[in-house]
Length: 484
Image 1 (cartoon, rainbow, N blue to C red):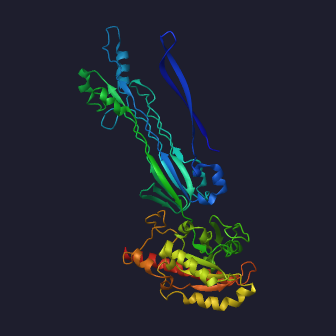
Image 2 (cartoon, rainbow, N blue to C red):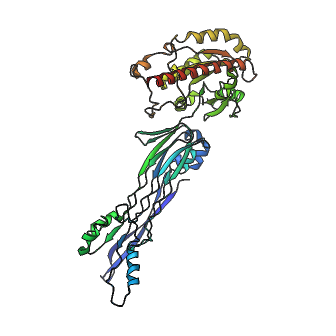
Image 3 (tube, rainbow, N blue to C red):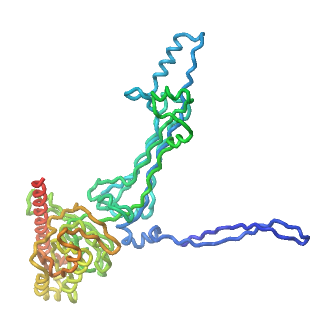
């Protein structure tokens, strides 16, 4: 539905009647306008096409304003009359000393409450950013004002500080200013970042006749000299910031391949995940996560070697999903061995990775030739395995030591993801290299995930590659410590 807005205009003019006298007339006219809604805020669009909005959103946050201070006066201090006794004079002197004072004896005046801050934190209970599309503006509360105006007494209190507004996002969310710098990479549960600081509360001033100001200045500097000083009583405004949130799935292993290659079936077979599985392409529209059990070859240490697998949508659907490979340590390239030209399918995906981010080709990977239970796939398996192993060089993978918490450098633009390159190798040099200049796969395994053929062999190769990544990562950390 497109909302319709009716705007009524009134026009006043003078008119002449038949008698020649002028009269005042009012005419009304109505203008109808149609306002087009943004597709990102339309709930129907979010329900029909969640895969287009689940991993990126732009929101506006505003911290709370500071509370106001107060303009106060000192209690009237009249001289005691003859009929007032000594007991009443003692009470007045005791009341005079009851004001709040600092260590140096100066008066402590109440201040307005601090405005609410805005904090974004990583919550394990969140999976997508879809909820933030429904509410794109978040405002923190303002600080409380000083309770009373008038005479300074010991009963006056500071204004109440506003609570912090905490916005939950999925683990792996990158927070940056809209078209600006990176603020935080919330890669671990509980990570948080302060994105907008609340305004400071206003101070309180004492209004005093000019002939008594000099004496009062020895007790406090918050003495109002003229009307222009009243601006100090007002609380400071909060900050308003536009933020871009980008979700990058936190996973150790990324499953990649063309649509209908069997990635979701593989994820469901080796983990407890239950992704949508069908016999048509593009069934997976959003990344699915599953947890792989620990490596049994490690004995008691297997429980610390669990790994998270991410099933990404088919690459032909778009390259934007490749941003979720950023945190992975190992890639599993799933190829449909029963396709007409599986070797060309393998090359196509490798080229897509090279065009999006050449660093992805340097990460260790295992090739899984799926659906070998079919006769045409079984017959071409030896030739296909040999052809895949011929593509590539004998270079050692340079990204073996990458952990799931690698530091995020420049963020992706609309055209793709900014790469993190060493100073010795430029972006142009890496783009000029072909897929044959990058390392060969760590292993090529033929399986039938649906029939359960050689699935255990595939798991052994995946766990072996993960062990190498973990050992290399430990060696890098040990080397870094020794340098310190």
